Image (tube, rainbow, N blue to C red; front, side, top):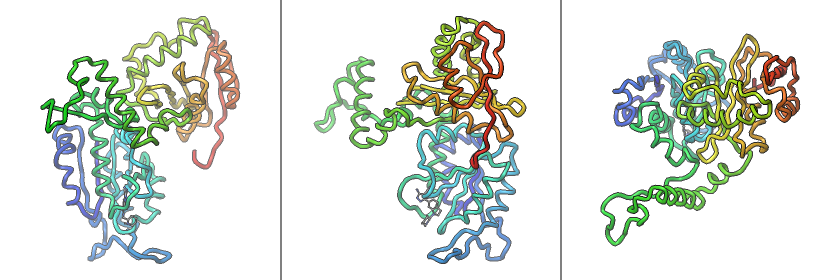
Length: 393
Ligand code: JD8
């Protein structure tokens, strides 16, 4: 992963050379480039700020140095960069967002100062072909004096998720915010300290009992300190659709088998491809398809994928864990698959078993129409829908 930082205080980012990013760079997992924005000014005072239109206190960062810096830096790498803009008005940094950013080949951090960056810099960046996405992110509901601290925090949250960085990926999965719950308390030797003893269950060697105790502690802490977290992950309808990551492959394969057994029985057809794929096939599919997943309390419960075929956006493998079907997650996944369709797509296409009545009803309710039924044992039925252009897509 390539990491670029644009700032008027490059020394503020010296920590990038230390600890975590430093180790990652040493191991070739990341390459870090820090740039002084003043390098793209043209006046002898190297001016980066000016008075705000509409009046008010403070100064605003001028657009020109940013525009020229982004022109040069975004053109430097074959990979389109995700431009990360720390801002108190940004979306909160979450583990989910960190995971999403960890799948990008390149991040460019635009670290503002003063009252902020002229808004047109962000609007213009969102029009650029060489910017995959512009993500405004906030560390939290308090005011800092600039974006550098947030850039360091986002970097740490992202780099530690890079495949191969943390010794054992398993420990990542176990972590609190991965599960949507707060950390359980941890202890080490001595077993008794200043009159405080380690909970006996942790000395028992009974791993099932230890895991249950830890989950109870996480739930209790979350209910007490962050009930908002608890609600979000356990209330139906509030799902977050995330790009699939290598760590999802195993669960995705299991969910695929679980969901397509039902399809095979419905259509009396055991030849359907999902039943004949391996975990390696699922891993390989992530390179061919834009794949998305949904987790609830750390469990992978839904997925969908899409890819472009000419001007048709092919939507596939829309699946919801059997015990969670009927709560609207399927609709959320279908709408997401449509929303992330390639800009050049004019039609959506998907297939389902010719005897999958519930699926056929659901897709027709969503505006799809059966175009043909192929002559395989279960068809399948091919459904399409014209893409309606909304202001956003
Ligand atoms: C970027 C300029 C300072 C902010 C006038 C103080 C993030 N969670 C967060 N809080 N504050 C920031 C942040 C603050 C920034 C900049 C991020 C660029 N400032 C401005 C508006 C009020 N001054 C942040 N991430």
